[in-house]
Amino acid sequence: MGIGVTKFISKSAVRDKISTKYPNPGSDVDAELQVEHVSYEHSLVGQAFDYLIRFWLESQHDEVHDPHTDRLDRDWTHALGYTRSRFTPDWEQPSESASEEQETRNAALERAEKKREQFRKTGMNANDAIDAALVYSGLDLNVGFEDGTITANSFEDDVVTELQELFHLFREQDALLGDSVILSPDFGERSFILEGHGDFIVDQTLVDVKATEDPSFKLGYWRQLLAYYILNDIHRELVVEEVDNSGADTPYPDITTVGVYFARFGELQTIDIDDYLQPWEEYERFRAWFVDRAIEENHDARRNYDPFREVLTEPYDFKDQTTFFDF
Image (cartoon, rainbow, N blue to C red; front, top):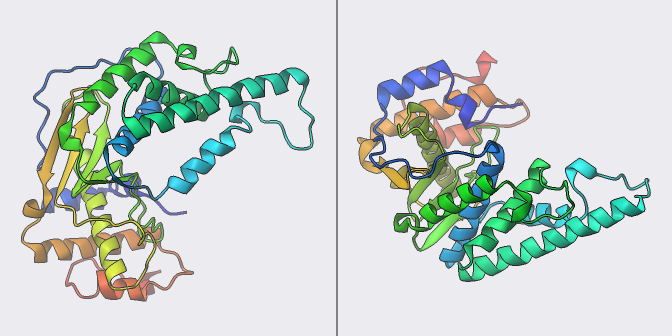
């Protein structure tokens, strides 16, 4: 099994290469901390906030692209039939009490879906959006079902308050809106080269969201953004050259800007990556090295890499190039 962006950029050779060739150009946050983390449900808050970002961006853009729309809708629809924490196999007849509890959960999920759809259409009533996000996140994380009724009231007050504050700050960010948005971009999802999933792309800006209380633009953030930029770049080239049309239905743009939104500070820090990577010829050689190294890590003997190398690595003179004779 191969590795994704997070593990790949943590490799010492990759870290060193990026640090030497393209040092971190990001700036730390200047703003004061706006939202403290006071709740104990770290994973719940993070999951619910991801949903809220999705709901808001969907409501504010006429052109919305989501490579995972079918999968998400399928997950939510499937959730009406069972929860991971209380799954009853088909061959077992559920008890009367279990059936009643399932009906209660299903009814709550259906109400949450209606609230989600209404918010996506109008962008109004943020509390309903938070309610829906908590229900979906509670289902994913197996929390909130103790009393059988799933609403925002099922969760601790500090969780709800924290989400309200984070969501309020996010909705104030005009810089995070544009003409079109791609949600959860996967850049063609080529795990045989390198797989990564970003948060969203608005017009030509790729944004990653961090909910940390640390205002530092860390080296890891920059490496992650650069990796996503490269994945987007090679995806566009492979589609144009008709080497691989995976994900071609999603119109990935020519990204000019990358950035981190520091959610607890309400501040977006961006990098004009097109200018930073100049001269372009040097970037292309670096990209070829990056792809070559990724193929080495994720090499699949069942796949013919020749068409990919003809476009992505062979035209460029770069050091440390490997061949399949090394395997």
